[in-house]
Length: 44
Image (cartoon, rainbow, N blue to C red; front, top):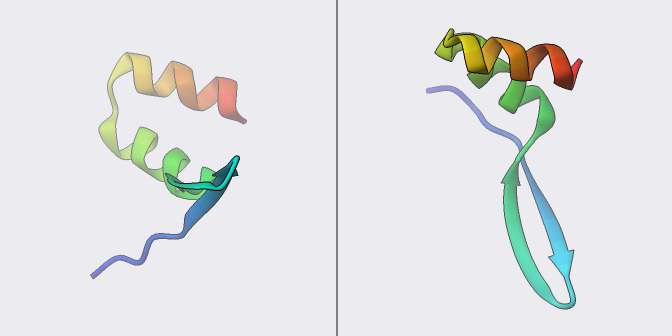
């Protein structure tokens, strides 16, 4: 089972879980859609 690293953002006391940047990049690469690949280039 793959492990994910989440990031918790705090917005005025509200904890907002978000995907980590390395995991987001992996997801974009795995998706393989043109939009995801463009996003991946912009994230690098």
